[in-house]
Amino acid sequence: MKNIAVLASGRGSNLEAIIKNIENGTLKANLACVVSDNKDARALQIARDHGFKAIWLDPGPKKTWLLPEFEEKYVQTLQEHNVDLVCLAGFMRIIKKPLLQAFKGRILNIHPALLPSFPGLDVQKKAIDYGVKFSGCTVHFVTEDVDAGPIVTQAPVPVLDNDTPVTLAARILKEEHRIYTEAINIILSGEYKIEGRRVIKAG
Ligand code: GRF
Image 1: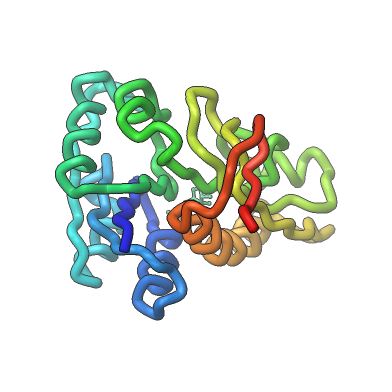
Image 2: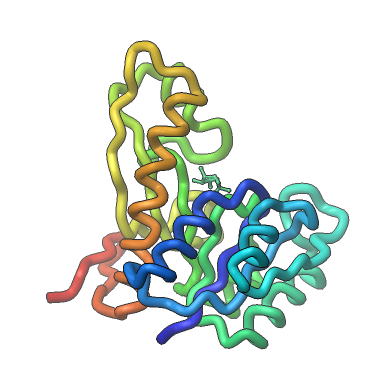
């Protein structure tokens, strides 16, 4: 069984879904550790409650990214836990060289919109304000360009006339919890190839 790590900064509902799916056998992976830049992240508590290793790592002085010497600690920790695949789930920092190089092609992220539409933050509000009739979620590889790596899987979600960012986010989140497991299973199985930007399932 391959080892995954989840990096999360907050609420941890995607982590919770990942743990549930590991426990019920839908997700064929071993959760080696959960790492957070935020001591008070609910994600860390969820990990502990389920008996998984929960690690806080000092993010250093920057707000939205990690200085190289701090990011190196993340790399070290993930390597010490023999992590095969890093899964970002609400990790609120831009990933840079140290992690990208150490885990090249082995970092996934989940984003609550149908990329390439609405990268960045507050994307449910952006989708409503723009007037799209469908939004959704995307699991993609993490590359140097934020929210722009090859797409593993997506799920569409309708935007209703009476949606607020909160109601739309809740409907999208349900799909996030489903497709992240699907995407991790595909990548861990190794049964895919990348052609240009396209992630294509083998067989
Ligand atoms: C999710 O909407 C995810 O798509 C985004 O951040 C949010 C994290 O939520 N990247 P949670 O911490 O998994 O509940």
